[in-house]
Image 1 (cartoon, one colour):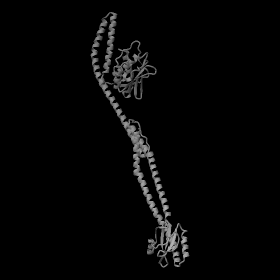
Image 2 (cartoon, one colour; image 1 turned 120 degrees about the vertical axis):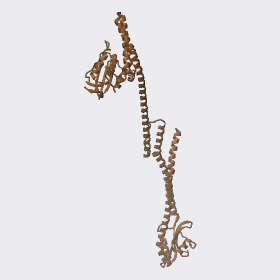
Image 3 (tube, helix red, strand yellow; image 1 turned 90 degrees about the vertical axis):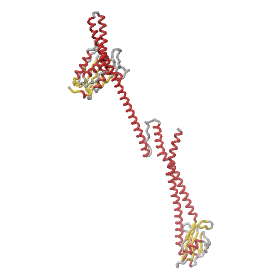
Image 4 (cartoon, one colour; image 1 turned 120 degrees about the horizontal axis):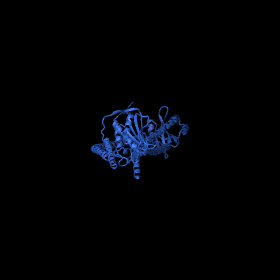
Length: 493
């Protein structure tokens, strides 16, 4: 279990690493480059603003200072220099002649600019210059402007300085804030990526993997949960649909195999019954003639025998011969090959013929079957001898099982004819199924009382007529046997 969990965590970590290397890190790298570019741009913008501020201040006082310088009005010059300190953070302002000698100053200044390259460049070109300079141990941003008289001649320099550390500190604070923000963004992105992956992707994927392993272990009824993003939901639905299709295919295969086994069993039974039928037909044919001879000789001896005991013995012989003849007839009926000799007959007439046929076998204490009215007055197109034989066999079983009464109920329901034979006996045996009772040579009667072919013959005849036979115990007691025929075999009278 621990190994499986480690494998799952490894696969999940693999996907997380892919998201980290191909999504999060490139995003953070681009963000860092953007911050770097922004800081550079901000630094340049600050310097530009610093230059513009000092240039505006210089241009504002340059003309009055030029006039005062020409008049040697030191007081006016100092007044204008002092006014500079009211505008922004100016740390020094000074006036120099064209040779770099100091004329007037206030604040942090440089005493001599004779060696200053910037000052020389301003005097030579007449263009303003600026840059960072170290004055009295401080880093200053100085802006030099030429002092031009009204005739356009340069006769001095104006230097205005601001402390560079003020801007450097602001930029440092801005840079520190930017990189701290970037670091916080990176940590937050990693946290969101880890949590989002686990919640949105990791858990649904683990559920899918768990579902696949559950199915692979043999649980074909397990289905994956449909959750997570739409794509993973589609995967889960596809997996469940595939499992459903496999389940249906397995069920269809099992059903086909079951049907095939059933067909093979039916074929085997038909082949067996065909073989039995051939043997039975031969046996019945071979037994028929000797039994007729024995019965004829017994009748002759019976007429010639005056002794009562001898007559009783001959009657016993004839009784056994009669039982054997009945068995031969049953064997012949079982081995009968259907022929298309169907005839039309009225249902009441068919039932009366069956009762008449069984009446010859009745003992003194056995019940005579009766037909309960109303009996449908319809004609049916059937193989009359065969269907009469089926009725006789059913009636014979009912009479043998009944205590006092056997009734026949005929009715038409849902385009089918139902002939029900009911008795008031003990009912069907519980140790045999209906299919077993209708199997050949299976009998619940005492030894010597039945052949076990009666119901098998009835079932065979009903199949020939595209009908069916059913047996069940009645709630009132006794058994009910129902012969069902399709309505298309009948015509109304």
